[in-house]
Image (cartoon, rainbow, N blue to C red; front, side):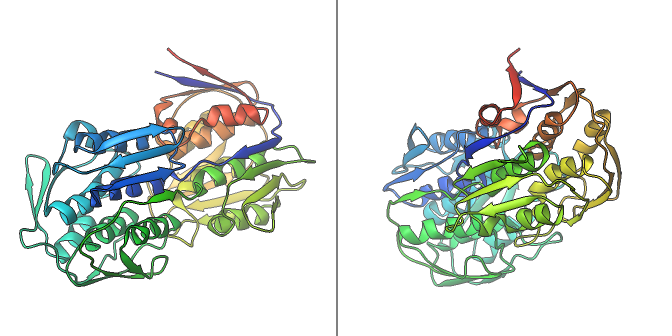
Amino acid sequence: MDKLLVHGGSTLKGSVHISGSKNASLPILAATLLTKQTCIIRRVPDVSDTNYMIQILTALGAEVERSSGTVRITAANIDHNAPYEIVRKMRASICVMGPLLARLHKASVSLPGGCIIGDRPVDLHLKGLEGIGADINMEGGNMVMQAPDGLHGKEVDLRGKHGPTVLGTDNLMMAAVLAKGTTVIESAACEPEVVDLANFLNKMGAKITGAGTRRITIEGVDELDGVEHTVIPDRIEAGTFMVAAAMAGCPENGVTLHRVCEQDLKPSTDKLIESGHHVEFNDTGTSCTVKPGSEPIGANIVTAPFPGFPTDMQAQFTSLFAITPGISVVEDTIFPQRFMHCAEMTRMGADIKVDNGTAIIQGSQNMSGAPVMASDLRASAALVLSGLCSEGTTEINRLYHIDRGYENIDDKLIMLGANIERVRE
């Protein structure tokens, strides 16, 4: 099992290219099941989550070729059974339900595994699919879905306890594109990844309007075509490197990020500026340079669905605030249990108190390297960031968490001047 040794004290400078979005790639890869024709998807990040999705597509009968970030998929003849041994490894595998149900009028998908950052039930997915005509039963740990007469458009409200569901919106949108009539999704997720999926489906011949708003309308069509598509930049990877630059960047030159989307990064950008750091985008909003401020200050964060502050960035900002003078408060309203990184950072000398979904952070410059354990994807990134600014060496175990969603993060940080070693045991 790999572990990462992060030697503190390095100054980051130079530039880095941001990979394609993991969270956009997964449903787009699943959506290729909607057509018998060949689809070509570019800038798919080489991370374990996309590898699992490709394994699922292959197990379902699709022909898949992958080379240098480009995935070519032909799903001419597919099966409706998604196998447990692969599905259990990744929660996002649930997004094959919508395409299978739309195209085959039946699907059997195991309840998924994935993160341990809190209860993320599939009830809204099932509610959405039932709303357009699916009959769903639980059999031996599998969700068995049938729609013998096809799916039929209807208005469905996906409002959930903690806000809109991104994958639930994706699933219903993919199922509805081949349904008879018109489907309206109320309380839809507005995230950029949902918009990217809608753009991909529209290229295939779907008729979707309203993506990026709380109301999405899908007019069903008879069939979809194969297309080529380039995945949007990963706003969470970009945000992570922006925070790294604010924590350990060269004050004179900073760190430049290429292949970003300024609009998608606004919540992270605004919070970095509020904390006293410098962020400057080029005219097209596709590159930005981040420099650490000379007098950083603490700030408060409350996570919220897009366009609010993303829950996937709260751990990284917690690392930033741990070395920022003053008191900062981070509240996660989406996943209140998502603070397992704080206990590990406390082992490194951080002053963090966590209570009922809120972390109160007293900033300090006196953090030191220690052996720590990654508990989930974004927590592991936060530990890497803390290690960059700690005295001595931080040993990060369970590195498979970070490999789920960051493409070559250690190599990219080394290119910027970090002193990091991946140790294979």
